[in-house]
Image (cartoon, rainbow, N blue to C red; front, side, top):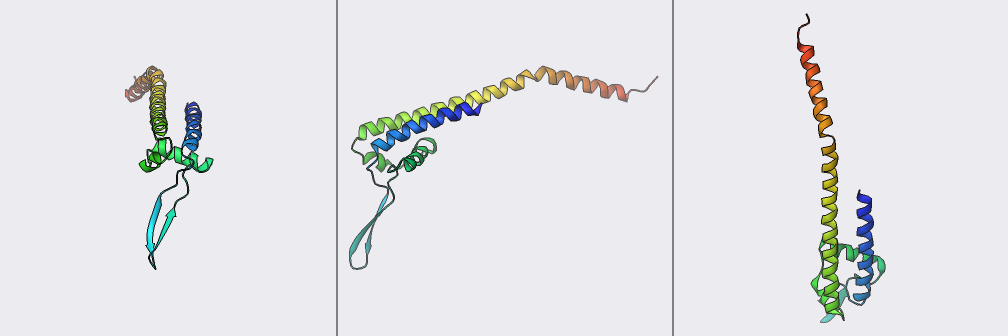
Length: 139
């Protein structure tokens, strides 16, 4: 049941990982500018979140599934409109696939339970009859 969902979601994430890697490859991570001793400015930046394919995969997972992202990263690219469109499509596709998978899993579980309803009802009725018969005095 879940195997098909995992295959679909991984393939979607791989596709969007490549797309975000191509669109956001040159965007720096979060930077902090600090004034040090001697009135010297220092700038420290995190690693580029889409600089390598592995970091891009983690950033895409965080972006689409967890919904945690920095708006500045999406706006610092050379292709702001295209990046925005790809971001909206990625979040929408992942959301729709995840909700459909949840509905499918719940529907399948409900169907399996419903298949056994009649058998369970008859078994419980038989157990009650056996219990009542054992409580009756013998003649």
